[in-house]
Length: 78
Image (tube, rainbow, N blue to C red; front, side):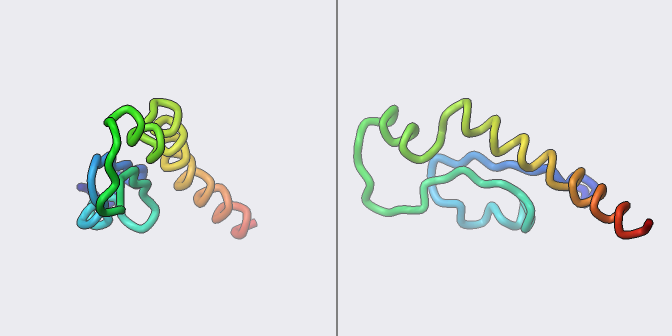
């Protein structure tokens, strides 16, 4: 992924292992990093944040992060 694309979100219904290289340190990852969890999918997805609301929240956070960083850098230049 091009380095200028800073807002990155990964949604993985499994382990987050390996996704950090794509999302970068400032990216957001929604995943299940536990072994042996068992329940119907709708219950697991709700428990681990695989909801529209949470995915939108994490995406907005990822989009805002570089903007806030840029604004803070501009303030330090004044």
